[in-house]
Image 1: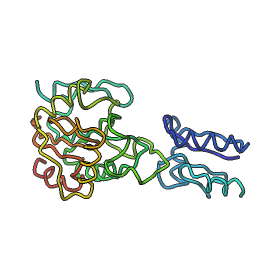
Image 2: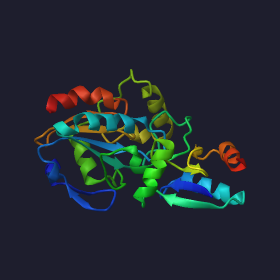
Image 3: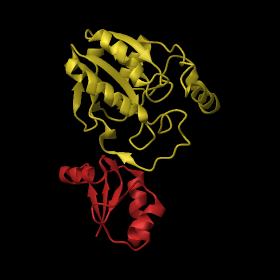
Length: 76
Length: 181
């Protein structure tokens, strides 16, 4: 399952979610502003609290809205 | 009317009286968006880390009257945002800082400390001045806030002692902060 770590009022998070949806990818949104556990997970994955962070396995991740990198991540 | 008479709202909506900061050295800054290219946030966080134990508080006031970025950095695209702007100091509610609609605190600060020009030696100074002339020429007149990351230094007694334009990097304010601690 694809997870997108996000915060509210984050245009890049919205773009990432829309792009994944347009590719028919199912994903789970994890809001790190509202959930401290998600915030910790996100920081463990990327080493920072910048979002969006998109990941499948919690190891490989894409920081920010980057279509090419998102494509590669989805393709596995 | 002094700095401790103002009441503002935190980013979470709670009222905060600036009188609560009596006895602290304050650096009051109008900040940009949590999604732009904003290295001054990092510089401010470093100052906060270095001096908070000795009595420094940094108060950030987000404002979207200026393009959502630091001056002169428009071409450097960044496609992410930061939780809590990536900083640990207090961020307040978004509001205006210049013109008729400016928050009273910023009307007070800019009346206390006038605009004395940008530092021409700073790498963004020429770009910032050109961008203002082209897009917001009226911003260059008077003492109002010119752009994101204008900083006001307040001593432990509440006196506004110095104003730093966006063309002063946070690291270059360290010696002025130390002098007040």
